[in-house]
Amino acid sequence: MLTGLRNLLLAVAAGAGLNLAFPDTGWWYLAPVSIAVLWWALERAGAWGGFLLGWAYGTAFMLTQVWWANVAVGLIPWIALSVAEGLAWALVGAAWAHVRRSNILEAHRWAETVTFAAIWVAAEQLRSMVPFGGFPWGRVGYAFVDAPVARLAWAGGVPLVSFAVVLAGALLGLAWESARLRRGVTAALAPVLAIVVLGAGYLIPLDNQAQDGTMRVGAVQGNVPDLGLEAFSQARLVTENHLAGTLEMAEATADNPVDLVVWPENAADLDPRVDDETLAAVEEAQAATGAPLLLGTVDYTPVDGRYNTMLLFGGSGAILDTYSKQRPAPFAEYVPLRSIARQVAPVVDNVTDMLAGTGAAVMQVPIASLDRTVTIATPICFEVAYDSIVREAVAKGAELLIVPTNNASFGHTAESTQQLQMTRMRAIETGRWAIQISTVGVSAVVDPSGRIVDDTELFTADQLVERVGLRSELTPAVRLGWFIGWGMVIVPTVIVLLAIRRRIGERYDW
Image (cartoon, rainbow, N blue to C red; front, side, top):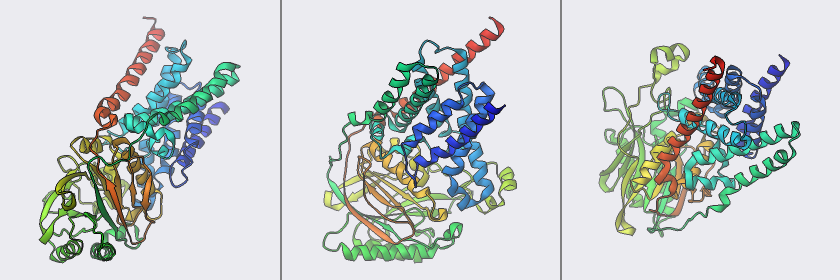
């Protein structure tokens, strides 16, 4: 009884501690320690015990990781999201208990650490897909963008980075376990291997050089007051602020004009295609810089919902291209199971369901200084967390990543900096320059090594003007990402099923 309580407390503490690896703390080196503690807590757990310990670990982590959900939508939705997402770690705990108790790897202790890491990543991949399209927030690899291991994203994307991090944590857990059992060689060697794994990224050289020319991009952060969800009631103000910021930037860059101006998601909530006042502001901004203007709006023309849309404007209000968000956020931009959700959070009745757009997240932008059209990727807000959306855009020719977002409803939480880490990881993974532009911050320009070239503060009006390189080479992560992602699901699933089959066979002496 006391051992079970101790392990439960360890799991909760370790889960909460994992969040310290993420912004705004950013102590990434604590993640392997957290994982090692979970390994220890699961050491003698059966399948149901592993399920409960994993659930406690995952729930404690998500409660701290997505605290911004409490700020944005309230206590009950925040807790419900955290508890539901915690089930992914419950599956890790149960699956790992089956593998260890089956003794399928009894003669291969080192392989246990690899298998544990593979099971963890499989759970990350699954919760990135289901339910309701998945929720990839909090994948452990995202925390390591400032560590050498982040370079592995170039080769295998976020799944490979997560795998390496969890493997390092499992090796630390194995070292502690071996020390208690007086297995001196393993106890001494395992931490060394953990350090080697985390340093493996040094073997991958990252190339920041432009391959297809350069262009100057001006990104405008217009800002609105910090009013939480009430920020959405400031449609006129947010557009006015982005116009003012663009006029200020146009004056500052008159001698060295920009090639493209970017406004964030929701910068023109009143669709300039149907609202004359907004269209006038857009035309004034575009005329001031003489460059195409990319901006976010909401399209209410469908009778059964709305679209979260990016519009590309040329001269005289001409629309050159559009993209609508493919993966609306469940319970935020649309409400599945509305009749049930209403009982938990009546605020859902204020949500007009957002429809899913179609087509890759790419737009064709004419760049006069290059005398050609440049393909850019435009994953909107949370879409940057989804491997397939960014990977598909780059595979279809995107030479630059632009991530428009609106963080106004999350206050001064770590939501925006967590999202920036995802954008930085995508830059490494795809070998592209990336620009995250928010209504209120944090906005940033990132080079292909994930380094922040310039950034802004939260809830300030600011502009970023940088010359970015255009690149067309496809990284291994983009070429092989589909196979890597599914491989990380299929292989550990087969191992777990073999372990379960063996346990069932032993129980019934088949």
